[in-house]
Amino acid sequence: MMRFWCCLYFAGYLLSAVSAQPEYARFPTYLAVVDSFFNSYQVDAHPYTTKFEKRTTGWFVSVWRLDSLVQQMPFWSLADNKFKRLKPVHANSDSDLVLTRDAYTTGWIASNYRFCPYYGYPGWYLDVISTFGGRFDLPDSILYGMARAYAAASGGRLDGGEYVSPDYKWHLADGPNSLSREQLEEYMRSADMSLAYYDSLARRTPDFKTHVGEVMVKRANEYVWHALQLQLFQNDSIAGHYLGRIWYDPYYMALAHHYLNSCQPNGILFTNGDNDSFPLRFV
Image (cartoon, rainbow, N blue to C red; front, side, top):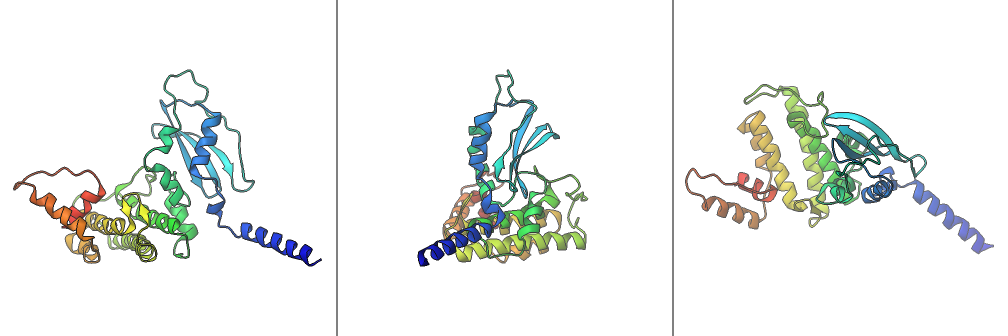
């Protein structure tokens, strides 16, 4: 009898543990979604673009032609935990230009779906912030996703981007001091929240790996990025708010100095990516 009750208790514990899982933990992985799609469909690579959207209610597949949405289909539902049959407008084509799984799994794009609770559609960062904003009791990978969401929310106001709706981007005058006081305060609130998540992750797990290396490097790069944004759209004084709060590993500082010392006066230096650009600008 005691064994029976122990089994019931254990089963109840497992059920409660599963039900207590956050919704993002119940989603199939991005790679599982891509595999399921390409196991069933062959679609054109041109003139359409197929995208995967990790939304609050599940995974969606959207079809675009240039910048116009042609079709949006639910592919996996959080409510019933299963994949759905699709009818893409450009499936089973005779075209020689077809999409392949490799086009979606190479490079760093897959990691965005792993780090960010929701991703891949206009305004994804607003959904992330609305659901988890201000929480720091999250796994390391989600802390990183939160940092990226707040950075996208601030950067999208100034620069736009692939997943930024036209009505979200501010239309600013050219030249310095183009932000109003309210716009500057909003930008800095989002930027500061992004940096707070990077700071929290760096304190908790300093060797956490991001797209560009350990989180300490990514953290410093983000401080410089926000400073450059404000230097461009506002002024040097406001930009200095971020430059005075960072440090780089001595290796990156030395690398940046050597880059500069290799150039002749008035030379032009072509850089390759974040880690040889942001430390350089900081130095």
